[in-house]
Amino acid sequence: MENILMAQASDPQIRVEFTKQADHATIASEKNGAGPRTVLEIRSQTGIGGCILRRNGMAWPDRFTVRFALQGLEQIVVQIGDRKWLGSVTSHDGTVRWTRRDEGGPEVSIEPDQPEWCPIRVVDSQQSVPIRVPLADKERWELSLPKHWLAANPETIRLEWIDFYR
Image (cartoon, rainbow, N blue to C red; front, top):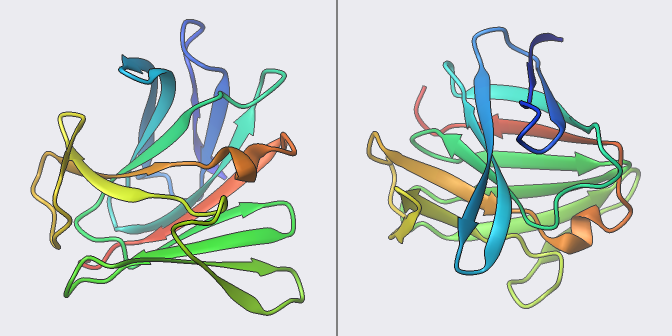
């Protein structure tokens, strides 16, 4: 893996290892009405990519958000251990869908009222805007990883993404 990002000492201690050298990210702590959160923003030059996140501290942040600077979000895969969560946003109506697949098991749908559900929204300057594809230049896809996903405090999280427009 290439292009390794290491957070600054003042930021959360997360290491990002990209599969493509052209991809990059920024990481920072933000404060909003709900309290502090860690935000990892990923920029993917080709729109198809992946990375491994490694925690350097004892635990993942209580509130961990991932933003993508992509025009669409055909697929996002979050893998923790042997479990994968697969998300997508349809281009025609902005519907968010999630499924879960354990290694060797069937794919199971996840509904918005379940603890495994991961909201996907579009933000512009940290304010939510309606989902539509393609996104404008300053808009980002934002996922706030559910605490349920991080409950086992894994050492690594694998992310893979596919943009609608390449």
